[in-house]
Length: 460
Picture (cartoon, rainbow, N blue to C red):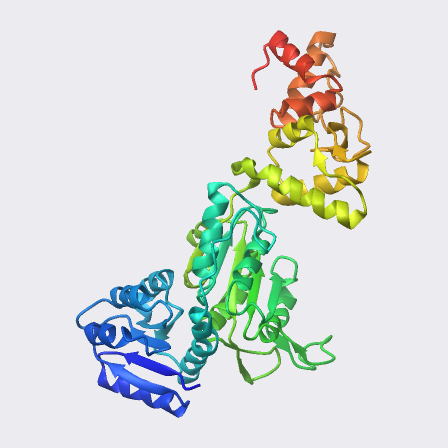
């Protein structure tokens, strides 16, 4: 198949250079001098890729991009921009551009981006558009709340592009699942998905982990090792906990995001790769940029598509869906016949705030499946918020002063009523006012707890 490329630039020299490069690669090339000519030629649908300059004499490249996407959405668009217009180029990717190249650029980098767009982007764009993900996706993500439905629709929009994605969210919210969903919905789905936890790799080894090393590069380098970027060529690299990366490594990563090239440690040979970067963090990177702890230029390179993954306490309506999913999975995995949670048990799960998010909920259900005596998980099988399943009822409920009601030297001993009130207040505080869980820890009924809260005038 002969691919057809339309080059759009108002500078004759640039049009000539890019046309010659693409012709040498065996592509069929046409040119346009301004936005109107580009729209007219692209409307035919004959072009697989349009290489579009961001600044044209008669129109904004963004407006031209929107016209192309509206009339021939199967056409892949690559933006060319000056460095000073990077913010606008990022906006272009949000409007559907496949990738962007910053002037001045290396011809080899230009060739690689066009090749990626033609071999990966164009065939994917011509495929039927995938339906929006619903309550439960095939990639393990579950959610019926508006927050999760927006994320599912967002995956559909961003997956076909080559844009970098930055996922924000607390620990345990499912950032890696979201990264895998973006990869699996993209044209790179059958290519490698390579994960690197930037916080788990020692600083002195992270460069080798990412970019590889040659034999003898350092004391323990007894053989050549390929880095994660090289292994992920044509696929996706997921950089988890990107906020933990040192300034020195941030500079090296910036080069890869811009030039798609690097050298192994101990080598002068430049290696070029075609990878999509998806990063994740539980930190506020904007705040770190303001404090000078994270490079601003790298932040904007990574944050082309920022996605916020809400904590479980902000989408509690998804808890029953997640619980049913985890019950089904662990019942099959563990060979049990558990099928559901009792009403009181579900109420207990819904009342808790889940500081550990979906990961904590999954661990809780796995334990409950193990300890359930029949097909139904009861309240007694849900060990929520306890340091250990065999911890005493009052475990974790005392302050630094020792047992509740223990008097220090010269202090009047507390009455039984005072001790009981102080203990209830402490348990409520540590369970985030989850009355069902507090009652279980106190080994009293929920109704009794409510009566004591009223009797003692306890404010929650």
